[in-house]
Length: 302
Image (cartoon, rainbow, N blue to C red; front, top):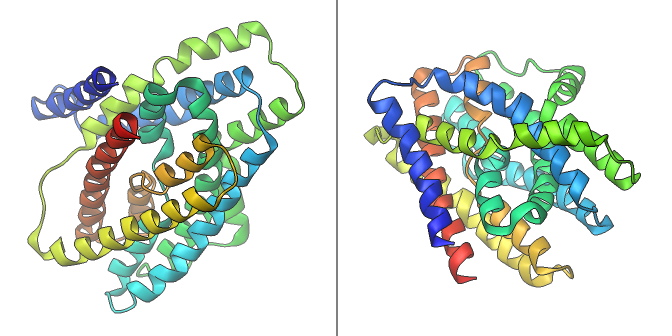
């Protein structure tokens, strides 16, 4: 397991080094991200759901994530009520969502294999709805222009999310015991093999260790809130839920994953200031590093 984590860290470091020596630029990450979200990740989902059988209790995972995201959003309104409007919106967008597809999938596959991806795929279904629904609404509401989204617009964003629609499609096929043609699965398997290295390279490409001093206090407040609530709820459910270990550890680890990668594009869309966008980028980087440590501990000591 230590060797697998070393390979993961090397690929992330490679992405960072390629950026530093100007072989790749951060803007190249936009293209890589599109390939991941529109091709390799959906392919991985199809292959995963074709090889396993979804247990009925797994449907509870996205429900738990949805409830958690809504509760955390309400708590965030109280915790960050004294912050400036745009800063409050930034923290609220980042509080409820998780980076599952880019971050968790490569590491979970290294730890638990294909079966582990099933659990985290269900976790990502709930995350997608929270990110494109709750986080999107809050980010828009606290922007300078105020709330501009309508229910139909949110619905269209959910429908246009290729990973989310792939989850839904693959789940329906799985629960209906319908198998895709072998040729489709073979092609999807080839494409899905690229998901892990591309995701890890992208993480390295977006790593940035510059930090502005004025963000120290609000950042510490946000990190304490995010990981404090995630740890409290995750550990509580670990002991309270009457399901298997993998189910319960999925919830615990999932609630401690990094900030959703969509937060920054949302901030750009809602015309947040460059200062707020840099703050969100720094928060994303810090949560990535913290979550790598958390997953390493789980992989080796639990």
